[in-house]
Length: 216
Image 1 (cartoon, helix red, strand yellow):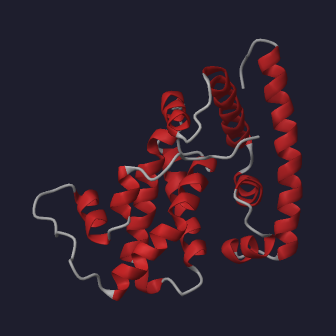
Image 2 (cartoon, helix red, strand yellow; image 1 turned 120 degrees about the vertical axis):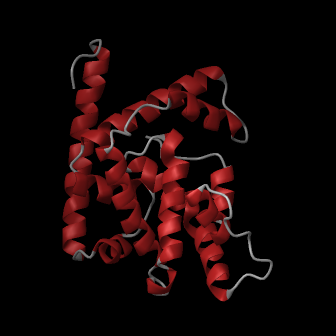
Image 3 (cartoon, one colour; image 1 turned 45 degrees about the vertical axis):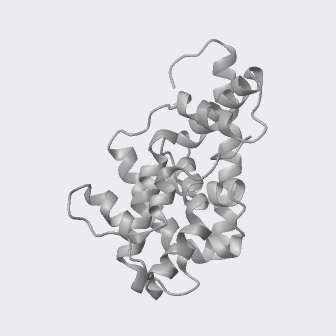
C-alpha cells in the first residue's frame, strides 16, 4: 500500500504561506492587498501553521477522496478558512481544526462530483520526485494508487477517516480521539472495523481486476 504523497511545495503551497497572497488568490481580482513587508504576529503564526501542516492536509485531502489535480486548490481553501478564523483556533488545536476543515472541504468536493482520476498528474508528481522511478515502477505506483483510491472510495466515511489518519498519516489514537471528539475506545473500534473493511474491499477489487473488470 502507498500513501497519498506529493513531491514538494507547489506554487499553490507557496501562495498559502502568505496570508495576503492567500486572500488575493481566493478573490482573483484587481486591487487585492500586497504582502505586508512587516508581518504581524498573526501573519507569523499563520505562516508557521502552513509550514507545519500543509503537507499533512494535502495528503489527508487525497486520502479523503480529493483528486491529485484538485488537492492544491482544496488545501488552499482549507488554509484560507484557517486564516479567516485564526483567532478562534486555540494553541495546540491547530491540526484538529485544519483536519476538521479538510473533512468539510473534501465532502463538498465529492458532492460536487470532483472525484475523478488524475493519473497524468500522479505520474508527473512521481516523476518529479528525487530518484524518479523508471517507467515500469511508475506503472506499478499508478496501479497501487488506483487500487488505494478505489478501496478508500468504497469505505464508510467514519471508518475511512480513522483509517486515513492512523494508517496513512500515522496519527496516534490519542490524537485522533481529540481531533474527532471521540472516546479512545470508539477510535480503537473504528480502526479495527476499518482494517477489516479495507482488507475485504481490497480483496474484491483485486479479484475483479484479475477477472477483467466489471461493475463496482
